[in-house]
Length: 204
Image 1 (cartoon, rainbow, N blue to C red):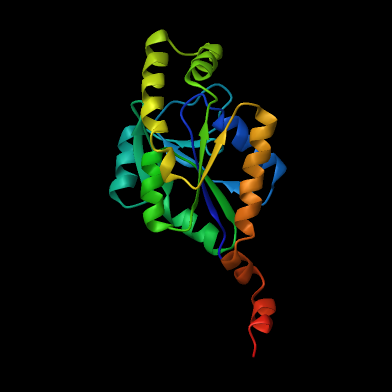
Image 2: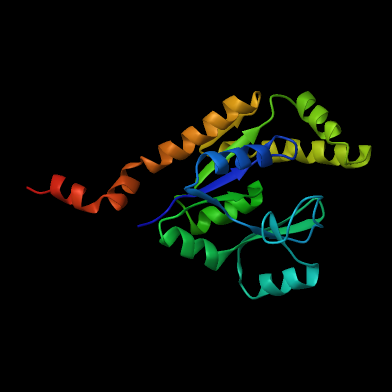
């Protein structure tokens, strides 16, 4: 039985981390893929929980050894997903969620063409800027760079299966959970979960 791979992509400040965290609490059948990154941990983050934090040299070694399904450079830092771990988990029937950018999503779809792509959008660029400034962690220069990058990232929204506009957090979380439930009800997934039932239905 094959699990479903969900790809969640969003510009910085669109609420991806909060929404994914809410989904994981609501739906224990979904497991988060812990990516590798060269960026330093933020306050409260733990190695192996939010990310596998590695230095650039270690990252490059793993990449060159073919350990990653996809990798990308975002805002001067490297991010990647483990190829072997994802194959093992989905083959065991587990639903896995990947938080990656549009570049990574393109790479993943080449290996997992049935992956479900979900793009999270802010309600407006003005609201996105307000949220980024509300963090109080980035300089004006960094915020300007993130806003410019966000416009470029959002142009790839057409490559995804579902689009959720995060205007109200609770509504957006309901939408995200609905996408996950709908994906599990696809014909091929139901066949895989209930082979005996469908074999009976297909008998002459």
